[in-house]
Each structure stands twice: as C-alpha cells, then as structure tokens.
Length: 410
Image (cartoon, rainbow, N blue to C red; front, top):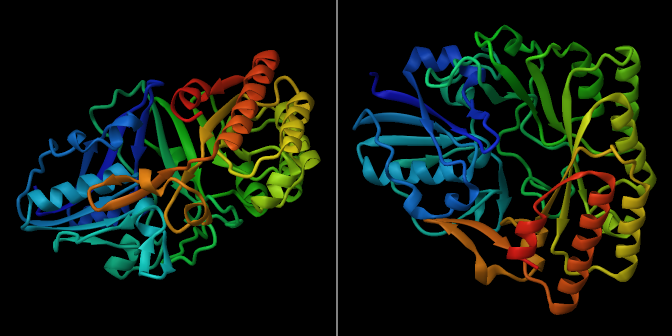
C-alpha cells in the first residue's frame, strides 16, 4: 500500500442503508494517481459520537507518510485527531464539510462547526482548501466518481453526496453554523453532468444534492435532468418561499408531473410569522403552506424540521403553531422531525442563549451546547411540543424526536 492515503468514512444506519461519506468523488482520478483510497467504518449512533471511548480502535495500515481525511461529521474529525496522537510520523490533512466551512472571527480563521480549545498535534492540519487547490489543479476539473466499498452488498441501499456548492445561498438563520460567515474556500460546480447515473452499483441509490439550500436556478436547471427509476431517489434542502415554489411549479409542469423520486427537507423551525421574522426566514405562513401543499399534490415527499428550545416564545406563537398545524393538509408532510435548539460556536444563538456550562466537547473541539431556557419558556416549549404531537397523530404525520425531546430537554 502507498504511504499516501485518502480516507473516507461509511456506516450502516438504523434504517438499514449505508451512509457513504464520499468526499473525494470530485477528485477520484487525481487522488488515485497520488495514493490509495481507504474506507473506514464509523459509528452511526449519534449518542456514542461524543463518548471518547468510542474512538481509538481503528488501526491504519501505514505508520509514516501522508493521510488526507474527508471529515463529513465531527466524529470523523475527532478520529483524525486520535490518529494524529497515535501516529506521530504520519502527516494528517483534514478537510471536508466539517473542517472546510470556516469564518473570520475574533480568534482568526475558525471552523464554524466547532471551536478549537487547546493545542492540536503538530502533525494535524485542518484546512478549508479543496483537494484540487492543495494539488494545484482547477476546481471540478476531474470526473466525479467513486467505488462503493467492497464490504457493502450490491443489493443494498446506499446514500451518498453529489456536490453542487459548499454554501447556503440564504445564510441568514441565526442558529445555522454556516450563516453570515465568509467562506475560506467557496466551491460551485459549473458543469452538472450527474455522473452518478453511470455508477457500477446495482442496488438502490439515494443521492443527496449537496448544497445548504437549493436555489431556484438549481431547481430549474437540474431537476429536469435527474435520472429517474425504481432504484434511485434524491434528497435536498429547500426554502419554503415564493421563488423556490415558483421554480418547482415550472419544473413539474415541464415534466408533466413525471418527477424524480425526491424527499425535500424544509426548515420550518417554529411556524409563527413572528418567530420567522426573528429567525430571518424571509417567508410567511401562507407561502409555507402553499409550498407544502404543492409538494404533496405533486408527489414529493417532505421532511419538515421543527425546533424547540426558544427563549422568547409568547402565547401568540402557540396559537399560530396550532393554526399552522390545523391548516396543514393531512398528507402534506411525510415526516416531521422535532429537535431541541443546539448552539453552534460562532452563531448568534451561541452568543445569546444560556447553556455554555453544558458545552459538548470531543478532545480539543468545542462542539456547542443544547440551550437552556427558564421555567416559563420551558412551559411554552412543552405546550408547543404537545400541540405538534396531537396534530401529527390526528393528521397521520410520522413524528420523530418527540419522545427523546420530552425525556431529555423538556
């Protein structure tokens, strides 16, 4: 094996499909000309990510040389840190979504997903540069491809990413870790060739169109070209706003309703016009309901994300929430995911909410904290959770996160 490795991670989810963190797909041939690929299995249980005992048992096949690590999640980053302490003669260069999204703050260049507290090993480098930049070739100049790990059966369901760009065009949500920050290294794919259609894999493919929030231009340009079939589907995040909905309607009409199988992720956050103004969502109740209804009528699946844990709810917000749920068509939402507000470093939520004393850390990496609220706000958030539970049951909407939220936060 070469003394230069390119490490990507994979893991089997509770749903039975494989999450393939294929961070080197845009530079497959370039990487292969420089060294060897190595797939490493990683822990899928989120609760175990922050248990440091989970790490340290993944040996590497070399003891000196250079290792490039594509870190999609913070546990990948921490695993690289552990390797760097175990293999002092290997130089580790860590990039990918977790490391590459960086902002200029009081402490200089920092990742917006974590805060480094303390010294990193001298053989560990975190970078926002792409592999193309590191090796001095133009961005997206290679052909996208990757090989599914041999241990994964050909009849499996696999989930992987096809990068459109590494930014969210909206970037105004105060809780979002990429909001309102300048990028150290912005990348945008200019040629959308959808190379995954030629993958040598006979199982079911779930393709994440990778961008913080898909744009109206993306919708018009890319959706009509997406390959369709029984063994391929797509997932992407979208704003429930006028421009996006108009673009979606245009594409559905263009395809005469024959749309690619897709699950759209929507950040509903808290359905109240007052709260959406506070959160800079740039949308209103009628727009959101129209978007969700159109998705249902057109055959898109919808994953709606709702956040609780706010420290500024008022009774009016609960009435708006109840009205939203009442006006929501029975099948407009496939799954509603409920979670507690998490404060990422370098966000407005991190700076304005209580809970820093409960900071979650992995080694030298400060990952943020689950926010705390006072008794009055806890009561309002609990009431909101119960409204959502009652309405989801009545409308036969699959609700996820309610039991964990009640048990852990409320």
